[in-house]
Image 1: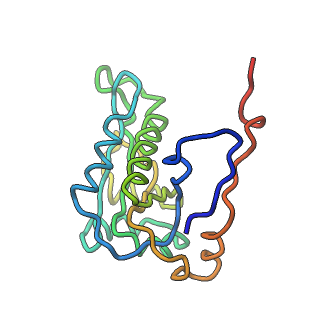
Image 2: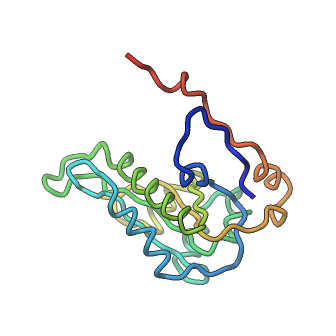
Length: 189
């Protein structure tokens, strides 16, 4: 169950329904459904249309899933083990047209993940992005290309029951979602 959020101004329900829950059920995510998420990411904006994002996908039971799971921090392993899909998200560090550093590659990859997350919400899937992973191991064991940075790991699947989570995590699942007030993040000139 997703906690209710409090808005200061109206926004589209697809945004209010997006949530990084930690409880997943064992329903398999069909390949076509999963590819719809990556299609949404593909159409994200990027500097010079570079599209620096790449996705290394692991489906529960395959070797990529195990590799991605193994680089997660212990805290994230406690709950991510139930997600049907794990994705190592990476960003290409240089522009293809001139090999210059793309200082926007992480920003652009984040935008692609936002598109992916909104599409997932539309399809009743949950996406939980994690910074809690070993970046060095991910680089050495999964990415294996110095032209790309590991950005995050995303767990994807259908929402499960929060009661299945270990103590301490269950409470987080039911906790009220909060954001900083707009006057802290917006300056009008």
